[in-house]
Image 1 (tube, rainbow, N blue to C red):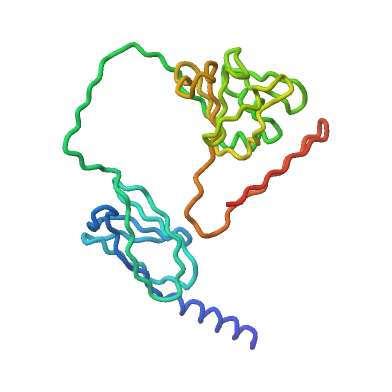
Image 2 (image 1 turned 180 degrees about the vertical axis):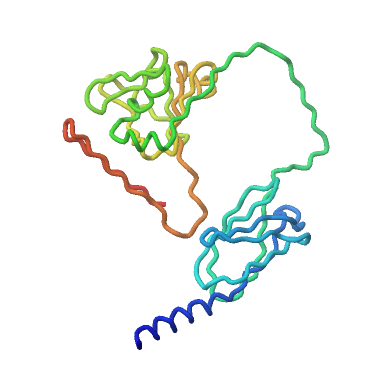
Length: 252
Protein backbone atom coordinates (compact mmCIF):
# COMPACT_ATOMS: atom_id res chain seq x y z
CA UNK A 1 0.00 0.00 0.00
CA UNK A 2 2.89 2.33 0.77
CA UNK A 3 4.38 1.82 -2.73
CA UNK A 4 0.99 2.33 -4.36
CA UNK A 5 0.54 5.54 -2.40
CA UNK A 6 3.90 6.87 -3.59
CA UNK A 7 3.04 6.06 -7.21
CA UNK A 8 -0.34 7.79 -6.96
CA UNK A 9 1.28 10.82 -5.31
CA UNK A 10 3.93 11.01 -8.04
CA UNK A 11 1.28 10.68 -10.74
CA UNK A 12 -0.83 13.37 -9.13
CA UNK A 13 2.16 15.68 -8.85
CA UNK A 14 3.01 15.18 -12.53
CA UNK A 15 -0.55 15.91 -13.63
CA UNK A 16 -0.74 18.92 -11.36
CA UNK A 17 2.31 20.43 -13.04
CA UNK A 18 0.64 20.45 -16.47
CA UNK A 19 -0.93 23.85 -15.91
CA UNK A 20 1.44 26.08 -17.84
CA UNK A 21 0.35 28.46 -20.59
CA UNK A 22 2.11 29.28 -23.84
CA UNK A 23 0.75 32.39 -25.52
CA UNK A 24 1.87 34.92 -28.07
CA UNK A 25 1.28 36.62 -31.40
CA UNK A 26 1.92 35.65 -35.00
CA UNK A 27 2.98 38.58 -37.20
CA UNK A 28 4.25 39.24 -40.70
CA UNK A 29 8.05 39.24 -40.79
CA UNK A 30 8.30 42.17 -43.17
CA UNK A 31 5.59 44.49 -41.92
CA UNK A 32 4.88 43.39 -38.34
CA UNK A 33 1.16 43.21 -39.12
CA UNK A 34 -0.68 40.51 -37.11
CA UNK A 35 -1.65 37.38 -39.03
CA UNK A 36 -5.14 36.25 -38.00
CA UNK A 37 -6.30 32.65 -38.36
CA UNK A 38 -2.77 31.23 -38.22
CA UNK A 39 -2.37 27.65 -37.01
CA UNK A 40 -0.05 26.93 -34.06
CA UNK A 41 0.51 23.21 -33.42
CA UNK A 42 2.47 21.46 -30.66
CA UNK A 43 3.75 18.46 -32.63
CA UNK A 44 4.59 16.30 -29.59
CA UNK A 45 1.09 16.65 -28.10
CA UNK A 46 -0.97 16.91 -31.28
CA UNK A 47 -2.84 19.92 -29.92
CA UNK A 48 -2.90 23.45 -31.20
CA UNK A 49 -4.69 26.75 -31.49
CA UNK A 50 -5.79 29.28 -34.10
CA UNK A 51 -4.90 32.95 -33.74
CA UNK A 52 -7.69 35.48 -33.37
CA UNK A 53 -8.26 38.58 -35.47
CA UNK A 54 -5.32 40.31 -33.72
CA UNK A 55 -2.93 37.39 -34.22
CA UNK A 56 -3.03 36.21 -30.59
CA UNK A 57 -3.04 32.56 -29.54
CA UNK A 58 -3.10 30.67 -26.24
CA UNK A 59 -2.11 27.09 -25.45
CA UNK A 60 -3.16 25.87 -22.00
CA UNK A 61 -2.46 22.75 -19.97
CA UNK A 62 1.16 22.46 -21.10
CA UNK A 63 3.56 20.34 -19.04
CA UNK A 64 7.16 21.47 -18.41
CA UNK A 65 9.44 20.13 -21.13
CA UNK A 66 10.74 20.67 -24.64
CA UNK A 67 8.38 21.03 -27.58
CA UNK A 68 8.29 21.86 -31.28
CA UNK A 69 5.79 24.43 -32.49
CA UNK A 70 4.67 24.32 -36.12
CA UNK A 71 3.23 27.65 -37.23
CA UNK A 72 1.49 28.07 -40.58
CA UNK A 73 -0.60 30.66 -42.39
CA UNK A 74 -2.03 30.89 -45.89
CA UNK A 75 0.52 32.61 -48.14
CA UNK A 76 3.39 32.14 -45.68
CA UNK A 77 6.17 29.63 -45.37
CA UNK A 78 5.53 27.17 -42.53
CA UNK A 79 7.93 27.65 -39.62
CA UNK A 80 9.01 25.20 -36.92
CA UNK A 81 10.23 26.52 -33.57
CA UNK A 82 11.90 24.67 -30.69
CA UNK A 83 10.59 25.80 -27.32
CA UNK A 84 11.71 24.81 -23.80
CA UNK A 85 8.84 25.41 -21.38
CA UNK A 86 9.57 25.74 -17.66
CA UNK A 87 6.94 28.33 -16.75
CA UNK A 88 4.27 30.43 -18.42
CA UNK A 89 5.74 31.59 -21.73
CA UNK A 90 4.88 34.44 -24.09
CA UNK A 91 6.51 34.90 -27.49
CA UNK A 92 6.14 36.63 -30.84
CA UNK A 93 6.44 34.50 -33.98
CA UNK A 94 7.12 36.07 -37.37
CA UNK A 95 6.31 34.37 -40.67
CA UNK A 96 7.71 35.28 -44.08
CA UNK A 97 5.15 36.06 -46.76
CA UNK A 98 5.68 34.78 -50.30
CA UNK A 99 4.02 37.88 -51.72
CA UNK A 100 6.11 40.75 -53.08
CA UNK A 101 4.89 44.34 -53.56
CA UNK A 102 5.89 45.63 -56.99
CA UNK A 103 5.04 48.92 -58.67
CA UNK A 104 4.85 47.42 -62.14
CA UNK A 105 5.38 44.14 -63.94
CA UNK A 106 6.02 44.03 -67.67
CA UNK A 107 6.25 40.61 -69.33
CA UNK A 108 7.51 40.20 -72.89
CA UNK A 109 7.38 36.81 -74.56
CA UNK A 110 7.09 35.05 -77.84
CA UNK A 111 5.82 31.66 -78.84
CA UNK A 112 8.25 29.09 -80.08
CA UNK A 113 8.37 25.35 -80.60
CA UNK A 114 10.29 23.83 -77.73
CA UNK A 115 10.69 20.21 -76.84
CA UNK A 116 11.89 19.21 -73.40
CA UNK A 117 11.99 15.95 -71.54
CA UNK A 118 10.93 15.82 -67.88
CA UNK A 119 13.30 14.68 -65.17
CA UNK A 120 12.96 11.36 -63.39
CA UNK A 121 13.41 11.20 -59.63
CA UNK A 122 14.59 8.30 -57.47
CA UNK A 123 13.09 8.69 -54.01
CA UNK A 124 14.73 7.96 -50.67
CA UNK A 125 12.70 4.76 -50.29
CA UNK A 126 14.28 3.20 -53.40
CA UNK A 127 17.76 4.38 -52.37
CA UNK A 128 17.38 2.62 -49.02
CA UNK A 129 15.91 -0.52 -50.56
CA UNK A 130 18.75 -0.83 -53.11
CA UNK A 131 21.41 0.07 -50.57
CA UNK A 132 24.08 -2.30 -51.93
CA UNK A 133 24.11 -0.70 -55.37
CA UNK A 134 26.44 2.03 -56.52
CA UNK A 135 25.17 5.32 -57.94
CA UNK A 136 25.70 4.12 -61.50
CA UNK A 137 23.72 0.94 -60.91
CA UNK A 138 21.00 2.68 -58.91
CA UNK A 139 19.94 5.13 -61.59
CA UNK A 140 19.39 2.33 -64.13
CA UNK A 141 15.89 2.24 -62.66
CA UNK A 142 15.22 5.31 -64.84
CA UNK A 143 14.15 4.49 -68.44
CA UNK A 144 16.87 5.26 -70.97
CA UNK A 145 19.70 4.96 -68.41
CA UNK A 146 22.20 2.12 -68.43
CA UNK A 147 25.41 1.38 -66.53
CA UNK A 148 28.86 0.78 -68.05
CA UNK A 149 30.42 -1.69 -65.61
CA UNK A 150 34.07 -2.60 -65.20
CA UNK A 151 34.04 -4.62 -61.98
CA UNK A 152 32.22 -4.85 -58.68
CA UNK A 153 31.00 -1.41 -57.64
CA UNK A 154 32.51 0.27 -60.71
CA UNK A 155 29.60 1.50 -62.82
CA UNK A 156 29.44 4.63 -64.95
CA UNK A 157 26.01 6.09 -65.73
CA UNK A 158 25.20 5.92 -69.43
CA UNK A 159 22.34 8.05 -70.73
CA UNK A 160 21.15 7.40 -74.28
CA UNK A 161 24.51 5.83 -75.10
CA UNK A 162 26.62 8.71 -73.78
CA UNK A 163 28.83 8.52 -70.69
CA UNK A 164 31.99 9.96 -69.14
CA UNK A 165 32.47 13.62 -70.01
CA UNK A 166 29.06 13.67 -71.74
CA UNK A 167 27.15 13.11 -68.49
CA UNK A 168 27.24 15.76 -65.76
CA UNK A 169 26.96 14.63 -62.14
CA UNK A 170 26.32 17.21 -59.43
CA UNK A 171 26.60 16.16 -55.78
CA UNK A 172 24.64 18.75 -53.80
CA UNK A 173 25.46 21.30 -56.50
CA UNK A 174 29.17 20.38 -56.74
CA UNK A 175 30.31 18.83 -60.06
CA UNK A 176 31.89 15.38 -59.79
CA UNK A 177 34.31 14.18 -62.46
CA UNK A 178 35.23 10.67 -61.25
CA UNK A 179 33.33 8.98 -64.06
CA UNK A 180 35.41 10.89 -66.65
CA UNK A 181 38.86 9.58 -65.72
CA UNK A 182 38.84 6.16 -67.36
CA UNK A 183 37.01 2.88 -67.54
CA UNK A 184 38.23 1.84 -64.10
CA UNK A 185 36.74 4.91 -62.41
CA UNK A 186 33.16 5.50 -61.32
CA UNK A 187 31.37 8.31 -59.46
CA UNK A 188 32.81 8.38 -55.93
CA UNK A 189 29.42 9.18 -54.38
CA UNK A 190 27.63 7.24 -51.67
CA UNK A 191 23.94 7.15 -52.68
CA UNK A 192 22.97 7.17 -49.00
CA UNK A 193 23.90 10.86 -48.77
CA UNK A 194 21.00 11.73 -51.07
CA UNK A 195 17.44 12.48 -50.10
CA UNK A 196 16.57 11.96 -53.78
CA UNK A 197 18.38 11.60 -57.09
CA UNK A 198 17.15 13.34 -60.25
CA UNK A 199 18.08 12.29 -63.78
CA UNK A 200 17.57 14.97 -66.43
CA UNK A 201 17.65 14.00 -70.08
CA UNK A 202 17.24 15.78 -73.39
CA UNK A 203 17.33 19.52 -74.01
CA UNK A 204 16.62 20.33 -70.36
CA UNK A 205 20.05 18.95 -69.38
CA UNK A 206 21.88 21.70 -71.34
CA UNK A 207 21.22 24.00 -68.42
CA UNK A 208 24.11 22.22 -66.68
CA UNK A 209 26.72 23.00 -69.32
CA UNK A 210 28.43 21.28 -72.23
CA UNK A 211 29.31 18.25 -70.09
CA UNK A 212 25.60 17.40 -69.95
CA UNK A 213 25.19 16.57 -73.65
CA UNK A 214 23.88 13.13 -72.67
CA UNK A 215 22.13 14.21 -69.49
CA UNK A 216 22.62 15.28 -65.91
CA UNK A 217 22.44 13.41 -62.61
CA UNK A 218 21.60 15.53 -59.56
CA UNK A 219 22.37 14.02 -56.16
CA UNK A 220 20.37 16.25 -53.81
CA UNK A 221 20.28 16.22 -50.02
CA UNK A 222 17.46 17.38 -47.77
CA UNK A 223 17.63 20.66 -45.86
CA UNK A 224 19.01 20.53 -42.33
CA UNK A 225 16.12 21.55 -40.06
CA UNK A 226 16.60 24.55 -37.72
CA UNK A 227 16.45 22.37 -34.62
CA UNK A 228 18.92 22.34 -31.70
CA UNK A 229 18.59 18.56 -31.28
CA UNK A 230 20.78 15.93 -32.90
CA UNK A 231 19.15 13.95 -35.70
CA UNK A 232 20.57 11.12 -37.75
CA UNK A 233 20.33 7.58 -38.98
CA UNK A 234 22.52 4.51 -39.42
CA UNK A 235 22.11 2.18 -42.41
CA UNK A 236 23.63 -1.27 -42.74
CA UNK A 237 23.29 -3.65 -45.67
CA UNK A 238 24.63 -7.18 -46.24
CA UNK A 239 25.01 -8.95 -49.56
CA UNK A 240 25.16 -12.74 -49.39
CA UNK A 241 26.52 -13.05 -52.93
CA UNK A 242 30.17 -12.13 -52.53
CA UNK A 243 29.79 -11.34 -48.83
CA UNK A 244 29.44 -7.61 -49.31
CA UNK A 245 28.81 -5.13 -46.51
CA UNK A 246 27.79 -1.49 -46.52
CA UNK A 247 27.63 0.82 -43.52
CA UNK A 248 26.50 4.44 -43.59
CA UNK A 249 25.91 6.92 -40.77
CA UNK A 250 24.52 10.44 -40.92
CA UNK A 251 24.34 13.00 -38.12
CA UNK A 252 22.68 16.42 -38.23
